[in-house]
Length: 220
Image 1 (cartoon, rainbow, N blue to C red):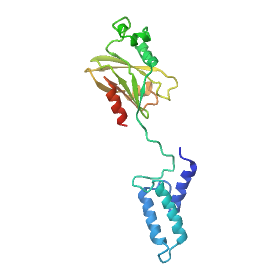
Image 2 (image 1 turned 90 degrees about the vertical axis):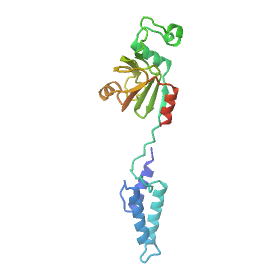
Image 3 (image 1 turned 30 degrees about the horizontal axis):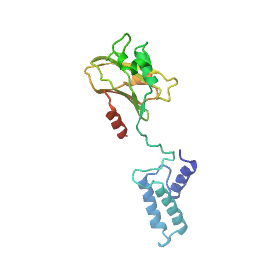
Image 4 (image 1 turned 135 degrees about the vertical axis):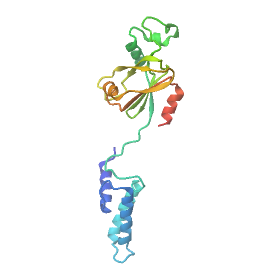
């Protein structure tokens, strides 16, 4: 957060040029040109004191980057640029997702290939669990390694990444697909607002590999 003193200094510099907070870059440059033309000491009737104050104010605003096209003084702290990041889910979180879909399995069932075959309570091909979450602000993208199946599908999605959640829970989303393989679905707003409070969008990408995750981060 920017200090109040700097915000106040910008407002005072704009005031010297006869401008209000929020003035655009072109307005700042135009105000300076008028002062430079009318008050320059070399001109008849020029005001050296007024010119010096205006020049100091303009130089300050220029150093602050407020004279470039597209910039303006909002008199509020500037928000940092959001960056995309990937959060790898811990083994315990992945197990919690599996448990919600099919209670009764142990963590060893998911880490031991010899025990991951069809058993009572085992996951079916239409049950999905993500292993990573892509975050861009409050836009979430869940990466699922398994392909989507034609027909009914279930996905267990942890919400611990949302700081606004009063209690970290794992939500199950069900949907039907007309095809199979890779793809992406977007959670409808009514479901998102109920199951993922605080998120502005929620997507699920199926058959997601490491390259897809890398591309997600590079796109940010």
